[in-house]
Length: 120
Image 1 (cartoon, rainbow, N blue to C red):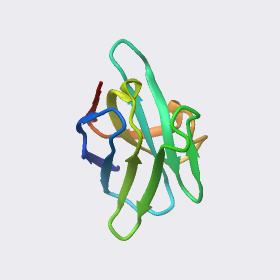
Image 2: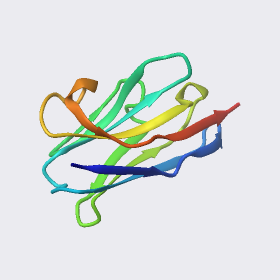
Image 3: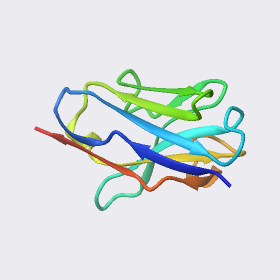
């Protein structure tokens, strides 16, 4: 079992920045894929970024978002810069033991989500 707790969401203006954190517990952290997904109202959950030995990004956030991890703290981060209104969503942290980091179905463990709202 893996428990995930997100934090760091909030309200920010267009062009602003936020850093999300996801604290993991329950098993060895360093060798599993950690990902971020988001879900906007009325839409499905979409891939944002993931990290294992390398990083993966959705095209919509490439160059603006940065995923990183601190294995000593069992924490993964998502730094979000140049935020746009279309980035508004609930952001979920997830952990995958196997499978493609891009696919929702690869992830077995999910956090409760944290709201990010970008106001114009």
